[in-house]
Image (cartoon, rainbow, N blue to C red; front, top):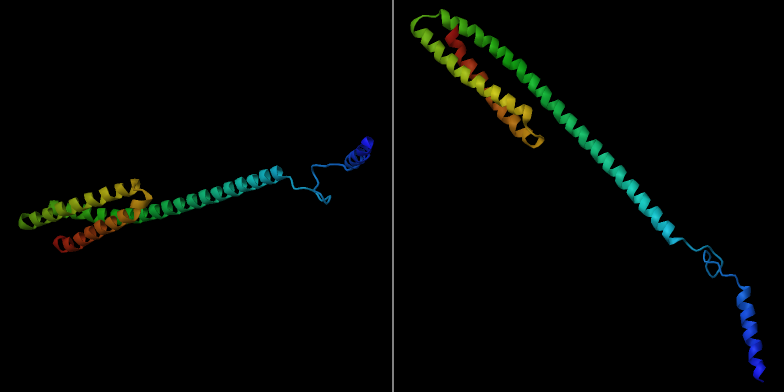
Length: 163
């Protein structure tokens, strides 16, 4: 009787040794997912997506900066043309003021002095446009437009004095 317990024990060992244990398959024989491999793949894909998004955002930012810079430069060129035209008129009036006599000379000189101050203000505003940041661009453009309008108005008002 004592040896009867050995038979079931040996039979159990025999059954256990006959079943292969494979760590890559589940109990039904279907493949087990490799969690480390899946996690690594997911991390890699997330990094790639993040890099792509960063690159696209950087590219969009660069395009916006370039567009703003081009708009700023076009505006400055337009102002340069307008200012050159007004400078030419100023120079012609300066010659007339030199040739004038008496009371009309004093009036012309006063008008030219006023125009000179406004021209200096416009030039200072234009210099500010060169260095203004994107955030300050709209405000600087508004200020520049006002200064240029003031200068044009002053020229228009002074026109009668130089006829």
